[in-house]
Amino acid sequence: MRMLPVFVLLLACPALLRADPAHGFGVTLGGVTASQGGVTSSGLSLGGDAQFVFDRAWSLNPFLMVSLERASATRQNVSDALGGLQLRRWVGEYYVGPQLFFHDRLLVGGGTVSSSQYGPGVGLVAGWEGAGGFSAGAQVDALEGQFLNPGDRRNALRVHVGYRWH
Image 1: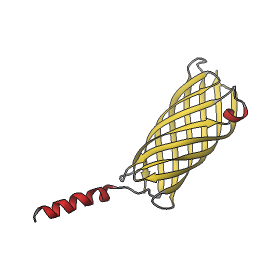
Image 2: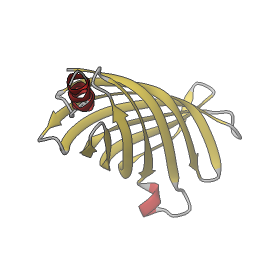
Image 3: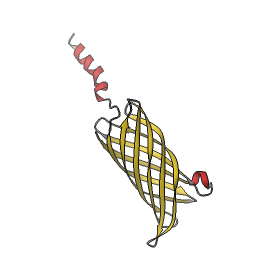
Image 4: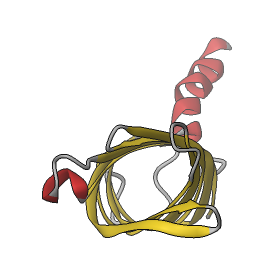
């Protein structure tokens, strides 16, 4: 009989630890690696979003993100800024979903902008967000060159950690 309270507590713990998606603002910091026209680049990525929760299964996340990268072959700096929307499908603390965004990529060398590419893009996002607000995730971006000019495709992978204020 003394084991019954312990058993009930053990059954209740996963429910107490479970984090449903929560409204709030979040920030992320991580790394990015990208490839475009045969040139690869990598660097840091910084982002912010606002999460609007519909129910336990769905949220809408408008986001802003910027990356500062270094192109390996050309030794130029790359700056890529994104603004868009993510639709997240939640299963417990984990999410996955599509994203639509508009971006502006700048290639900078010798103190001047040598090229600029901007337009729409699509991607996928997946991650985890705990009850305490900490998060980890990844996203894959396919920018407009993917659709308008197959010879100039830019694809990026971003991996990040973050925090959301509830």
